Amino acid sequence: MTSYTGSGPYCFANSLSMLLDGPSPSVVEVLTGSPFGFELIAGELPLFDPYGWTPELGVDAAVGALGWTCRRSEGDDAEARLVEAVAAGPVLAGPLDMGLLLYQPGTPADDMGDHYVVVLGIEDGVVRLHDPHGHPHATLPADAFLAA
Image: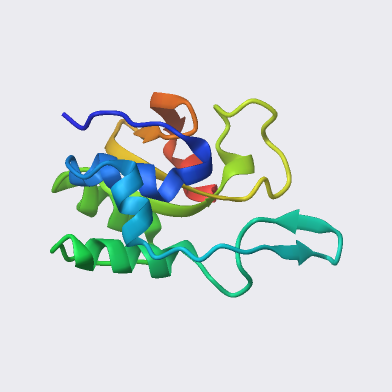
């Protein structure tokens, strides 16, 4: 069973920590090498994320530093690929549009930001997942999850 760890602002570090079932989220966060900084979206909205840096860079760095390997998958036929991947165990999924994760308060909403979760399984067209933004054992219809 995959234990739950939650903290929305550090969604990919917490999700990766849940997936690897070992290192603490703070260790994962340090291993990502995430730089400090911010950018202004549309010249007005501050986002505390350095320009040009993406969580995928950090996830790759942390996974490698912990001695793990991963297979990244994207493109067409997402549902079939997700079903195949989760058959082998929990899966890190992201970046997802947090505004389309319909169990989140205030959704659906336009572009609430990128988000990462751990998919635990898919049964009867329903995705079961741990969302580190305060939603352990969340569920979402597969078509809604894939839209996110």
